[in-house]
Length: 411
Image (cartoon, rainbow, N blue to C red):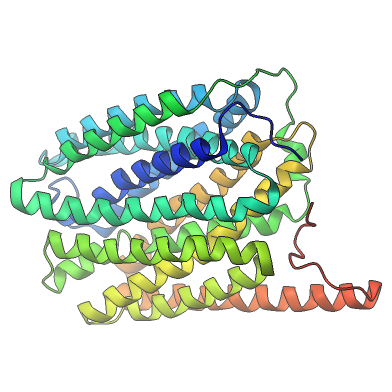
């Protein structure tokens, strides 16, 4: 396949990495502010609902963004997403010190606007990367995009915590406004118009693709691992004496771990296959969950960082495999394929915070994180068993060397 797109490959990487990084910068900026928000009032369940609303809005708009990107190209959806980013920034700044029902309503509207903007950034951006790069290079460029996600989450909590302690809870959103403006320039200048097409691959064709169930499961699991600790650890660390700056730096450390893992995992996926990389990531994530629920701030922060590293190892391979899934359709349905990825990712983001908040309210944070560790360890075992079985079956049936990525054939 030769990518046919008017946007240059390097520009596609730059604009997509910027878009995803800015989205997650805003997403992460909220984390250290949670304990001090009057509308949240220290409730893990309310915090979980705030994170889930982002996911619900993303789910509701992603299918339409996928169709739009496949028919008209990624430029228009990515420009439309800027409106949602601007609205979210203004609403968050307004709601920071508003108590009660009004404050909660403003926060929910802000999260919904951010989720809508994220649907455009992620679906159109990732489809742009796939359309401008050959399959054997996508692992590296998708890893770079995920690195930007990690850096956005790293900078968001760190900057937000420090600025809010120094200048008040609205101060971080001045910085958000600046990075959103930079993102807008990148999208306007670097993403070129693509030829419109009336032909479109329906979602039902994508859903019948090879091993789509595995791809959806890994994507949802990786996202859930990231989101599971977000409503719990700020309150847990606050109870251990960390202020907003300390909480922000803790989540920044987790994002740094993820940003380091993503390009490495993407490159290894190109070489050794998705199952092996994802299984390793699930095992690392399980270890992180065990540590995160400990009764010590130091151990909890260490666990948070380990979870961030492992979750990106689970997620990086799925981006490559979903791109290959799109290549099996004619015309190549990058918008629909990455819309499917977004839906799976968002499903994990929606369910995990609610499950974590509800479980912590019932059995406490240590038991909740231990249960998450068990689930991650089971996933690692399933993936390792599946790979071994696939290799054995291939050897018996063909006597040939097994493809390094058994989930989907290389092109």
